[in-house]
Image (tube, rainbow, N blue to C red; front, top):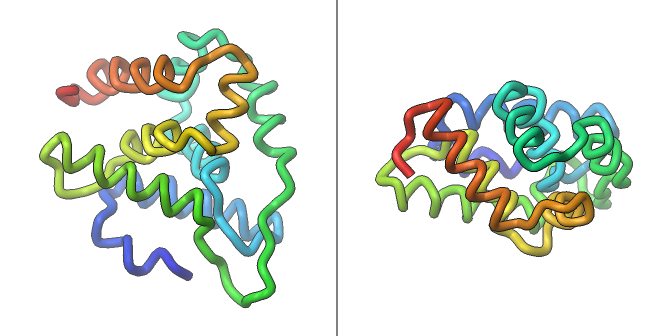
Length: 153
């Protein structure tokens, strides 16, 4: 798995999200983990935060999860689980976000922001289809991070 190179950069909250994304993708028979897998894993591991985000964005949880879950998995001919190009972008954005906040490790919130910093991601497209702009989602995540974690944004 490609994650070995990144593990030392993840805080425990981000590791929990990545582990969940990996397990869920593996269970579905996927050979690549994508940004939507991370978003779905965040929804499970950080459910109260995620539910509050959806509430503020006026998005129905079940509708969102159904749209993201119905995306066919990314398959590759190589053996083992790989990281999609989109997820690589998400992790780079997450690391940039953590560094911008003078943190050495990526937190789960940084991964979530990373998902929405990638304009081409399926997650961004689905949120926009449901009426939530990418920048509004990022701003709301930052507001919630202060309330939930006391993070200074």
